[in-house]
Length: 594
Image (cartoon, rainbow, N blue to C red; front, side, top):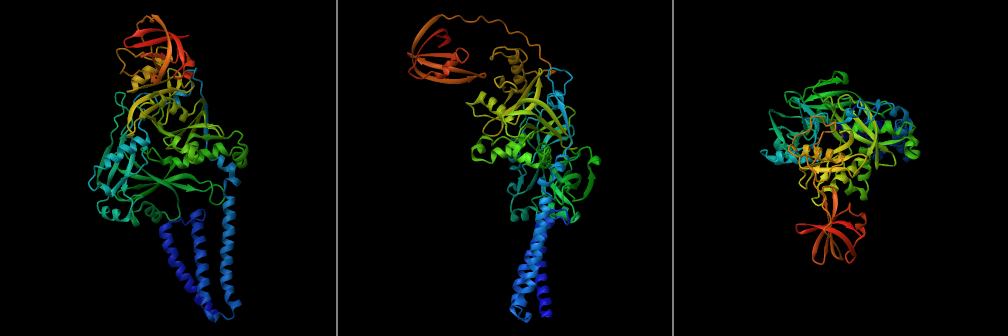
């Protein structure tokens, strides 16, 4: 019986080893006791061994009677069951439920109060309009559209695809969105393209020139192609290449950066669990991998090369922010009571997209933006709201992507998605969609700056909206025009007023209220006649942010601003009205409704 038992063990172990070697090659677990993937690997291995051993031992009649023959298989399943119980206990011990305070303490957040009436306020720190050369106006969607078009011009373009990462970087003093070109999905396409490698990467300029975004992409082709990418196979696969070099490391996701000579590198965070056995992972170092040669080197955060703008991934930073704002008063408070619990706009983006009602409404809402602070450093920016109320921001969270430092700015303002909807109403007849707002300080007024994009995904115009008053919103075809119109509106000038003579010139100091010339006095038209009649038809239009009503009465066209009488919204075809008006060409302008 012992001989048969040993034979069954050897056969089962051999078959299991072959299966697990294949799974290890595909799964690439970190050989680290603190890695959940490592535990899953052995969970699968013990399950496979127990199943195979049960089958093999069944056919070994030398085991003796049935009761004795089943005992070894029962023992193997018992070992697997004990492992499962230990795995579950370790998982619970590593969960936020048992480590809420530890997770909360991972983030170090500096809180700053903003008083816009104080010139020494920290409001300028968060605004990205320190000068108009540092406005990253090209958002992720636009960069993807431009990059896809550029890659389509490559020889054998069907072999390649462009990644949708497009991180904001500072390259040789200019700001771009960077994305790598990778192999198109599928083994056979990679097999055709592997000898040529990946030709390069895509840069999309993000700052405006003369108040207009260039909306162009630069295809950078390299003398030595990129060999190691996430889309490659076998040893050219970046994940496998890193695992072969660092078998025990737990990795965050990889993303591309380029040095000042344009050489591409992969940046991969190294994660260390801090809560339980494998929970609360933090990034304390990172691997820098040359995408052309595959050479890798590990750096601490403090020793990172200066040209690296992103060490931490967006997902990691938003997880750390969630722990900080959610678990300050414990796990169960975050789940039920939610006292003093805040959420990021990034969190609401995912939450609202998950239900059918919000999926279309929040389709263009990314919940964050890459911005440039006043010192030129690339940061992630997102809003902060109460856990159960996403309609109003309590402030902003700005995260330095190279150091991970987080700064909270307390200033109650408009929720970003509501600001997007407010400026979209200005051009509703064109169907433009607003980009995620950038916080700016214009003439001491906390404001949101957005681009308006057409159906093709390209920027058509620019819009600015006050955080405290949605009705103060303007739109123009260039950024300087938008700033001028906005400042004019802050001064209470007419909606149709424009900065005469230099409308295309940007203000030298957008923080200060510009000394705008007083428009030449135009006498207010006086009513020349009174009229009345039955409304045959009603039409509305949005002109310079103001709703205008057009009436057909007895074959004549009349126009009345919503400011004449707000009760016009209740008028319907067939209603009778009396009014005073004056004639302006073919249109009779109503100035009073009786």
